Image (cartoon, rainbow, N blue to C red; front, side, top):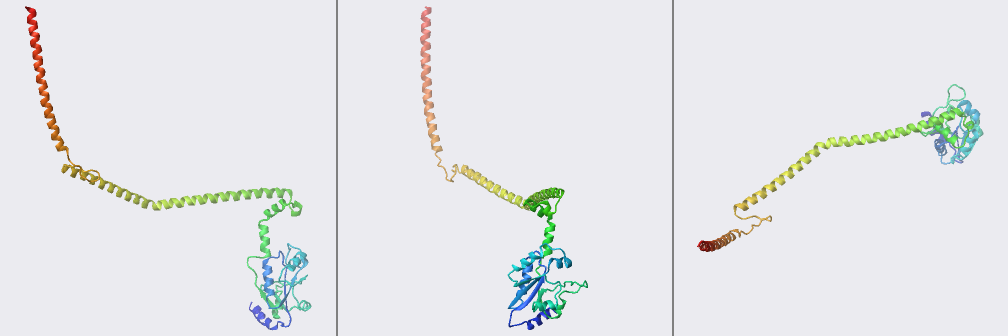
Length: 319
């Protein structure tokens, strides 16, 4: 890294100023993604005036030194041509950059990340060792979280889903390299997976409900004593007010009876006219009593007269 930085500092001094700086970046660029585009952007912006050449290895070289690709060499070349940072694409790029290659394309600097890449010798030497030693290496930074290998791993991980998706879209089993038995097994597995996901979702919903109930229960338990104490306090206060009101009413009634007067509900005293009315009533009964005795005496005289007449009549009949 220190060597690369020193080379970068020296490379600025040797950059031509009367023409665009010719910077070369190479790679496989399989499944071209934004990580590739960002590295090419850094290479393009290495100098104020840059002409970016991008070399891409063919299928034969790539399969020999790295492994099988998803995209063909022509597809990879075409993807690079559509990147806005690329000025020129060099097909059939060599695995190891040589001085002859640099001279052929008039390359001033080589841009790549600083990770070592093994050359074709098998000795584990860095393919960019020559360029770094010559002070013509420009370091670029890799983008974390994205790479061709990561994309392939995503596809492999969800292989069954991609196979079933393509079968449903009209691809044949032959196109996908899938037998009849394997297709049926995949369909069964997909159904089981969907069922498992559904069960998992239901379990999560049940778990959420249980947590909610437990939370409310804990809240009730924590606040139960406070709620009960509050209720008892309110109940005691209400009973005290009611008892005080009843006692006051009783005392008011007792005070009213002691004074001979009745207190109305509004607190006023009722006028006492009973005594005068009582004596008038006695006078009335006295007069009635006197009248009653007069009636009794007249009735006795009448009866006595009738008895005397009856005796006289009986005496006459006997004679």
